[in-house]
Length: 235
Image (cartoon, rainbow, N blue to C red; front, side, top):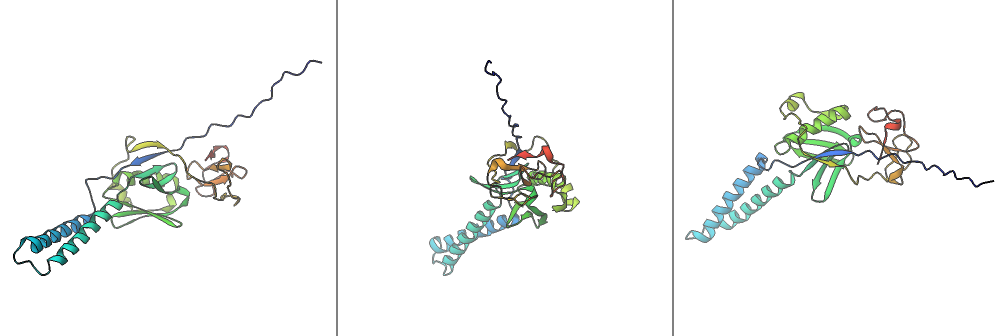
């Protein structure tokens, strides 16, 4: 009897859906009023101190204090002005602030509240709060609020008048990037509480990013109520 020539069929792994986000750089032409006022006051005190200590004859007795205080205030204004304006990413993986090569990220499913406090938009989750200055990130904040309203509307605590004062989101805004290297291993399945040991075992809600074990994907996402099943995507 001739040997069977039938080949075993190999199971094809479905192509991994690409998740995308937009990267927004801060508006470098705008700074917070506090930084501007502090920087101006510090520079003025520093200049007066230098004049009173090394140029004026006789030297002013308190000039050294002006130099030290002015330098301190100016340095603080420059420092805080810089740290509040980092690039921001908004998209399928949630919201992230980019500090050099490090990303501080909150997935949509992990965000507990989005609110305005003074001139800053605060995005709060368990153990992490991201701060975005309105003056430097109006376009990013406009996109963030638009995405949040469609994905996790219950966490948005921002008045409509604030949204109306922001620029209208446009398709050309920001730099489009593919989401990469978002770690889900170590998290627990939101449906079964099973530990996700390997990235390949995880399935994500395409709407809010909630994490499930591939064997326990519910029909609807437990966080945003989005229909799942076969719509869940690989991590």
